[in-house]
Length: 530
Image 1 (cartoon, rainbow, N blue to C red):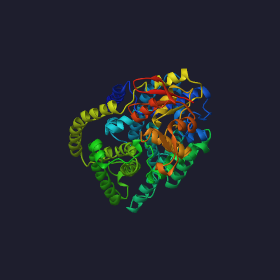
Image 2: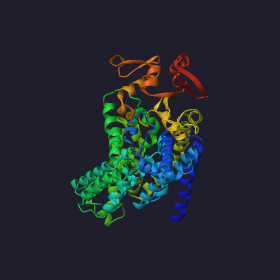
Image 3: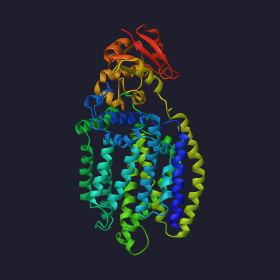
């Protein structure tokens, strides 16, 4: 009966993942997918050890010649072997989502959660915006499932398993190296809290705190070093995390992606209302029940009556603690922490279910959950389709102008593009030319703040006849737009989207220093004269 139920749950999960990706097709969830696949393409041609990056002429990534996403790009090599941008993205995205749900299911089953497949499906569909992010070709799809696995092997595993999982996290995405140390800190606090409440001090099947901390630190360092030019990658990670936080604190108007700005509480409730209610209720039930359990019997009752084993209690308690931290991060720092909050917070619901005192209570809770799920599913589909319509990107984004530039320009010519998010699609479709920033705007700022601000004014349509190399403008030097693009950026071509930059487009059309040479429904390409 159990295997039959697992089979049905497995079919439901695969069907849901397939439906989500089919509803997205032919569009792409997340513009970063183009960059990651393009970088993997380049590794198939130059070899995996050459991390130089000449395409980002105004990016510190090009300066240090390293790759903080190197491990993830190695994972994408089989997909890049096709040489087709869109096909590689689609296949990789589908398999990454399947690997994520497979890991979540396995971890839940490992901790004796009944109906683990259905709880996995519930976690996937809990928040529509989070579901959308799990359809992306980005390293967080793997690093977050590894984070959940790390909690599992700390609570029920061996030190060497902790080391390997921590190494995999930093190897895949060095910018997420802090996830493993953060988890082990939460683990240590949960263990300490259990002892303060009178619980057992013995490890049982869990990893000792000291061993866990040592294994995480060693694994994180190992994952960092297992890449070409690790010191350069470390510098990029420092910039992406520490320097970025410093610039955010300085309140300078950098061109941040929306995912790294705080999420207003009203928006969180509007997009995650049902999960927020379930998370708060389940967390309250779990915390109270676990505290009472530890105080009543010192953690030994699991040996005398049915209930979660102490190792499983530790797993869920750590997940609750981690989810609480990420909920605060989403509201105070970066909205993308909503994904971590959802994943780790979803673990509270099956634990609350397992703590129910009798079968009658479980049946009542189950009935309520079925009713809520029936109401939630249509809303989830509606919200998901909104993301597909208004947030997803066309599969041929920048493909036509990139192809035209490859055929009509000299190899190595620099293309001035008005927005940082133009880089990935251009790079994926044309690596004959060179561009400006590579990925996050903070890398462009760290390369040269003066050039960054000159680009900032033009990208924002703030001024177009001239641009400035400081913020505010009167504190710097003003330079005519043609001179800045030609001499400061060394660009031979300008790519602009009229819908995003109407003022800049009008100026380029009227300035004799620029000649319109190619037009598509979305973009214009100008040749820089002189």
